[in-house]
Image (cartoon, rainbow, N blue to C red; front, side, top):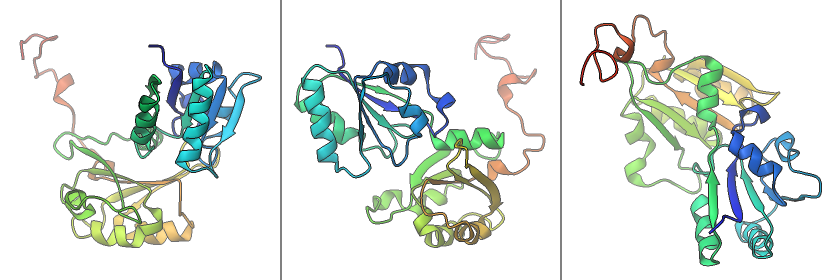
Length: 254
């Protein structure tokens, strides 16, 4: 069954960070249902002339899905455009379930996420041999909460590269939790609207995370990357490219 609905990731903001598949989906849409409070209007403008544009910032999920279902059942090509990657904090599962119940095929097109754009903007790798090999994507509990097994304290105890979305409103509480597990001088990247024209990005010690956030009045579209990997890597290097390391494609079977 050919998908009549595409749920598309718009990436972090910059139009040239769209995937080719995402751009082609938008350019062929007959109906574009897009998150206008978060998606760059330049990306929505890639839709062809005559495409119906439906902004969702004032709509509930039920109202959004009513539009998507009605247009798709009428045979129109519908693109539901999300910021970032729709698989992260995008209410993806609820939308897919409603579309499946209606017998509609869905294609999900991934998008570049803000943590990737932030690391790239810093020229940083979030996995450094001998220092940190795990990246955790999470958020503060806030009003919706998180499962106890995924509490911030438990995640912070890993001392991994911790990327926190949707957390700026709770930054004092977040900083307090993190300081129980990370050293106070652990680097924290604070990224606001990374890849947009008004991007603001800096790296501060963990102990300054809340103060700097409040000074900049950051309450939304902000990502925190807390990571020992943001320190000077020194001589750390991957074994994959080391002359002393054999593998399947270079002189060994391992």
